Figure 1 (cartoon, rainbow, N blue to C red):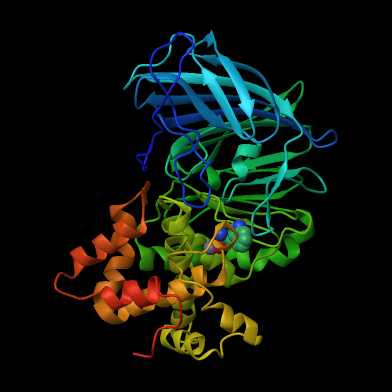
Figure 2 (figure 1 turned 120 degrees about the vertical axis):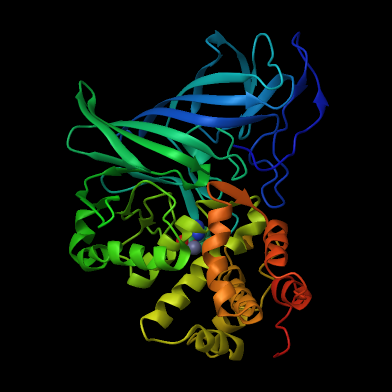
Length: 458
Ligand code: TRP
Ligand code: ZN
């Protein structure tokens, strides 16, 4: 499913008519990410990994629709060795330049037609260092590996259209040596012993952005339960973290029930968590249906990552500039949880941030105002503090403007009306305007969301 209408209009061809799909979708921070000219609807990934050799062998089968007549198109793949590429069963020409894998189907592709691309590849998948210094992509662990993809790490382990604007359904099969477990998104549909080890097959039927796909390989303590509503809960915990995680993960159904109360029906068909130690990895990620934590989470962090299932995973940012819609809502969910638990009210949290008394370190309090949340200065700042705290303050100002009743309705209706889709800042502004015609939101957007400095106290 494609949310961003950007294609490049180059012309070339070696025989086949049509354009060459763009090498990026024009993201303001990651211009090479994603590709133009087609829309992936389904990924079938068949992977095998041996931790000792750190060797991944993969076969990716993508089902896609051509958005124009194409002589060639690109996939994103960072590292790995490509062994063959087929389009609709026929050998295709291909070459590589950086993260761009250019594919030339023998007969080209016709606008509107569905096609299947099969890529066979192997190698030691890379760990990617982001512009902000954080690690993602393929992260070896003590007993396996962990794949995390925000913002561009998923291209380290499978070829695809790696931009959040093109969401798709997934089937992910992972074969690992006997004794190890492979965990991914969605539901475990099969677990089979093979000559090579054990194959775990996972299915995600809801649309998923590639940055939310994950695979965790290693020794895990697995629990399979279900919520009172019958939603399957699958948790996989690094045995070193089991004792510390038990109490908080046992609260997952309770946190999910609270979230549904606040944000509306849960958008996916299963839930759970992955707790895995990957070197110095210091962040959690809202991997779809099954958030990943680098160690036993606090309840507050669990609240944050579960809130992302509505804000980020079901409604996904159209570009990486729209990150504040993810982190603002997930951070505001923490404030609401605290308020509902009888701690600080959201207003008190807002005031402490505004007054610069929220964090013990004054530098952290100043960092809240370092740039406008709706317009990070560069790719190194898309996960910066304003994108979390100041964006949550934008939502609190919105609550003050709309009133509690209308804001509570918006918390439920915004994700419901954009379920399994994508949205931009402009979409959100238009949506808010439609809910309160006649209200002037100019100060909210111009000063709080886009203003360079701390707005004057109202
Ligand atoms: N998006 C993650 C969350 O809020 C956190 C995160 C992922 C992150 N990658 C990052 C934070 C890189 C800083 C840098 O749950
Ligand atoms: Zn977050």
